[in-house]
Every structure is written in structure tokens, then in C-alpha cells.
Length: 478
Image (cartoon, rainbow, N blue to C red):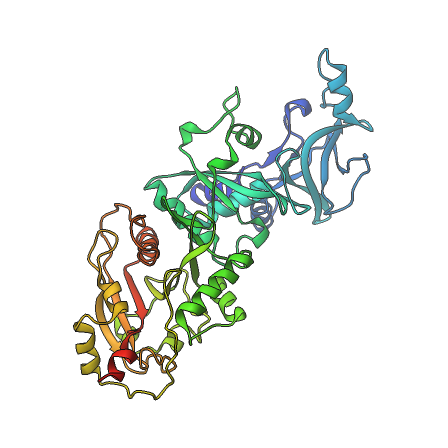
């Protein structure tokens, strides 16, 4: 049983479950968690997915490949000896010979034992052919499945398997059935969760690939069981999508970059610094942005970064955003104040490879800053390209509306004469999906990708914190 399901059953009905282990070859039951132990110990063993202590008739050991009996917490194959173990497979001496070593039946299951209250209790990691060996580390599919169900209540069933990987040998893939709701949105929610720093899963356990499937489409054995080995044999790796892939269309893939994506992060930083000069970031700060908030790149067919958007989720209200400086909003550019459950998304940078930076960078003080009224009139004149870009319709809806002009919102910015614009994008109430339009510019597409994410996450508000980049050129001529 997946530990999460066992715990939910006990909590809901108040009926303890007898958690045990065995196989047909071992008369079904070899070990079990006693029901007459202290409640706290029972709950601990259930949570840790213990299969309990050996039955009185059974000798249970953990063996390595050479047949050596292993010590406490050393991982190996469960081996069983006792009166109820089969004598062999009928009319199959070869299978019988390979099934036994040193008088013990080899179960094919990987596990270990720990001494609890002076008694050895055993713990399963999974079938030997189902264990995921990632970079030489054995990962338990059952443990990862339980953690996934615990962190995402929309999951009905989940099966974790190992998929081929050039770097680690195997990577973690998750096949998911959903309880209800839109499959695409459910999957995006899970991807967003998994690409955030997690307490429940260590980074090595996080699925790199995901596939959604309906329960009736699950591959089963002839006896109606869903087995990971059957899944692995019948579902192609190409049917899974990367956990970091948040959206795609005919021209681009929109990937959330993590610290593992160092080459792409380097490329994205170069694009960011070209578009936002002289407000450049160093590599350390940009890595912090990727770790804390969301750094999403639009990759073209040649796998090059052609667009970029960064955003954070927060719980700040509009009135507070109206008075926030860029430095304060982004926690000194690190996005450390990102809240994984915030009800507002604020986009803090949009970049496009098509952008041509000015040949000369003005110096602070070359032109005095205009009043808010003068800046407002300048924007309404339609002469600022950045403002006009955000005003254009996107995602099948109207464009952004100016909420507030913030003087000295970014005093380091000579192009915008220190001003920032807080603009609000509309979001649909309906559940019709927003997809980045492949016929639009990549800058529009990354905004639409952010709108799609906001909608799937159930976020209430989507803002951009941008700059009137043509302000210096306009007011220097006045």
C-alpha cells in the first residue's frame, strides 16, 4: 500500500490496518506490523511504510548479490526461509535453482531492516526490476508515489518508473491519473509544485518527466494488476513531457529553468542583460531568481533561448504594489519574497531576442525626471513602445491597463528616468485554456504563457512591473 493511502484510511475510519508482506511462493504472509503495539509506534511504522517483523515461522534476511547477509539499514534483496516457503516451481528446475540461494528464497524485492524497540522491522523499497537507479542511488517508487499523493490532492493514482537518462542512467518519471477537473490544468499545477523547492521530496526524487493518463487506459497484467514494469514496457518515453515544460506551441517550448539548466540559464542571463542594460544582473543573483521565483524561457526549434519572462507570486494587495520600488518588490533582485501559494503574480521582466538595444546608454541626470502628469501624458500619446506593447490584446483578451506610475520606482534606470509602470492584465473566469499564440511575437507569447500559468494555478491577479523605456529619448528632446 502507498503509505499516504493507508494513513488516510486509518484517519478517516479509525480502523487500524494490518500491514504485511508476502508472496505466493511464501504462503502469502511473511511479515506484519503487530496491532497490539503503542499507537504512536504503529503510526510511525505505517508512515514509514514498514512491512513489520517476521512471522514466527519465517526467517527473513537482507542479502547482497553474492548471498551475504547484510546488516541494519543496508539495502539488498529480501530473502525468506521457513516451513511455508514453496519447495520449487513445478517442472521447472532452472527457475527453482535461480530462486534460491543458501537455502533462502529470493523474493526479488529490495529493502532493509531497522531495529525498533529491540525488534527487527523490515522496509520495502520496491521490486528489484522496478527500483530506479539514478546516479548509483536506489530510489523507491512507492515512497515517491506516496509523497506525490500527499503533496497534491488532485492525484487519484500515480505510478513512478525509471526512464533512460544520459547523465544519471535513469530519471524519475510519473504516470498520473487525476480525480477530476481539467487534465491540462492539473498537470501544470503539479509541474509548478515540483519545480519549486520542496520539503517532502529531496531534489534527487523529483520526477523529471510526467504523463497524464485516464484510469481505464492504464496498462495491466492478465490478472488486472497495474505494475510499473508493464507500464515501462508499454508506454514510450517520448509520451512523457518534462516537468519543467509549462507550455508549448508550434514554434516554442516554454520551460521553467532550474539550477540544473546551467547552459540555458547562462544563455537566458545574456539575453536578460542585453535587454535590460544598464540594469544588469550577475550570475549569482540570476541563479537566485531561478531558485526562488519563476524564470521561464521560450526555446525555439533550435533549442536556443528566444524569449524570457520572470515572475513571482505574492500576497500583496494592489495598494501596496502601487508604492513599491522594483528593488523592494524583488527583494534586492533575488525574488526571495516569492510565495508558492500567493494569490497574485507579478511579472518583473520580459525579454525578446528580437530586441535591439540602443547604441548609447544615457547617464543618470542627463535629463531631469518629468512630473507624474507629464509622464502620464507621454504614455497616453502612444509614443512609448513598452507601454504600447502591454496595451495590446493578448490571450484572446484585452491588453493590460495602467494601474499606477511609480516615480523613483527604479532610480537606477536612466532610460525610464527612474519611473516604473504597474500594469494589470485581465484573467478569464472561465476555464477555457490560454495558449501562447505561435503567430505572435515571442514577447507576446511569454506573457500569454504567464497568463496560462496564472489561470491554471487559480491566481486572482496578474500584473507586470515594467518601465517606460522610451522616456529618456522623448523628454531629452523637449
